[in-house]
Image (cartoon, rainbow, N blue to C red; front, side):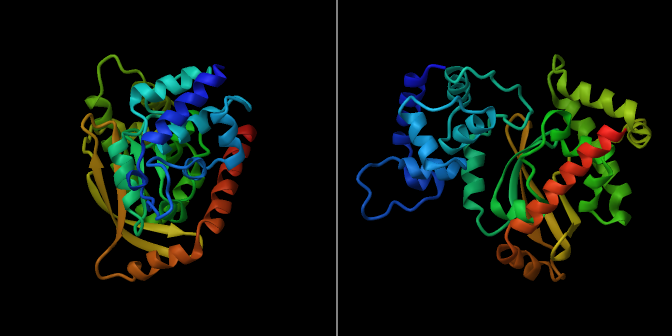
Length: 296
């Protein structure tokens, strides 16, 4: 790893960002226009000591997950993100995975959505980044790797994934996921292999998916009304809205309370409940899913 160069690069990117760019107050005592080290550490979910070591060109090799978090915290462009990975002697992530580059504009919008659950996902339903209310509503999605990173993959392969929706809505959600996946796969370049590999895998392991795929339904999920089952506050009915990136590969999703329901008060309660309870449930679900696969 090029320790000194990595540290210099991180410092240069930190110093160019204004606090307002990432939703932070400038403060009356700020001596420099850029971010402080502790602010970058907070945004990336790292300890201040660890980040200080990185900027000094010391410390251990950062993980791919940490590099992705730093790239998002520092609002790096795609080229800058790739450069950061190469400085750290880590392979540049392939598009579509959990460490995919998130467009800075989408990150900026996400950072401004402080009062509503919101997250950025790929067209294959891999969650890239969530705000705290999305974690509280949907669970922490950052721990999944490989094919399991896609919620559509988990939906058709892991029964635990369906606990997020009432059983009466499962058939509708399955059909919607398949139609959306067909639209996303068709929109990708002919040389792309990621979507095709996902479809082939699901065709081989899920008779339900195979039957729905044979219907040839195609429709992007641009907006939807959903009923979600939360482990603490119960059933929440929301409108799910989507903002697509120019190439269609990423979507900013945000959730608003459905009119005529009690969901507004329930979503407000999420900020009180916090993420601890739902994070514990998410961790238990990931463990249960791993145990199920080992037994199978």
